[in-house]
Image (tube, rainbow, N blue to C red; front, side):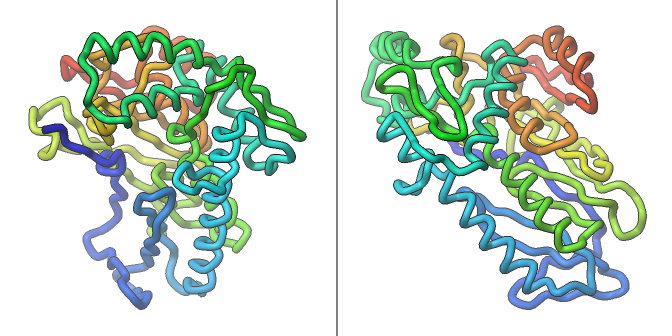
Length: 326
C-alpha cells in the first residue's frame, strides 16, 4: 500500500526549546520571545514565527485575508479560482496581476531548466489521479498520448489574457504557488513593519533575524543515513534576511494510483534521481520552482545553473544516498 507524505515534513523551523506553540491565545515571555501563528494555506499547515509585543491578532487576520485572496486565484480545489477557470475554459480574460506575474515567473524557470520545470503537467496528474485501474502498458500508452499536451511554450500569458495553444491543456501551480504565496505573506508582514519573523507557507522564508540576533535555522530531513523515511536525521541550514528554502522529494505526496507527486514533464520516469532536493534562493518562488525542476536534472547541469544565478544554494540526496552541496 502506498503512503502519502507531506513535503512539509522535510522542512522544519528550529528555534529554541523554550519556543511556545500558541493555541487559542498568543503568549510570550522573556525566555520565549516568539509567537507562533498557525493557519492553513492551499490545504496545508502554515505557520509564522513573530516577535513578541505585536498586535498579533490584527496581523493574523490580515494574513488569513491575504491567504484567502490568493487561494481564490491559485487553488485547484476552488472551482471558481482563476486557475480552475483557465483549465476549464482554456482561456482567461482579464487575469489578476498576481496570476500573470506567477506564470511569467514559471516560464522563466522553465527556460532556465530546459523544461524540467513546467506547470503544464496537470493532464499527467489527472491521469494518475483517475485511479489504478490501468495496467502498466496501458498507463504508459496513455502517458505518451497525453504528453502531446504538455509544453510551457504552448501557454500564452499577457496582462489581458492567459490561454492555451492546444485544447485539453491544463496547468498546476503545485510546484511554485506555495513559494509565491510565502513571498507575498512576507511582504505583507514587512508592510506591517515586522523585521524579525520566519514564514512557512509550505516553503520557508526569513525576514530579518531571530530575536537573539542570529540567523534563522531550518532543519532539512536527511534521508541519506536511514532507510526508514519516517525516522530521518536532520541537516540544519541557516537563512539570512530575505533568504528562502524549498524542498522537493519523492517521499512527498503520492497521487491516487501511488505515483510520486513529482511528474517529469519531459519523459516517463519510474525512478527519481533524488530522494531530496533543497534549494536556497533570495525568494521563495524561485526556490520552490527550482526544487521541483532540479529534481529531474543531473548535478552537473544543476551546478551550471547555480554558477550563473546569484544567491542560489542546493542541498541534495540522491537515490544512492549520496549528499551534494552546490
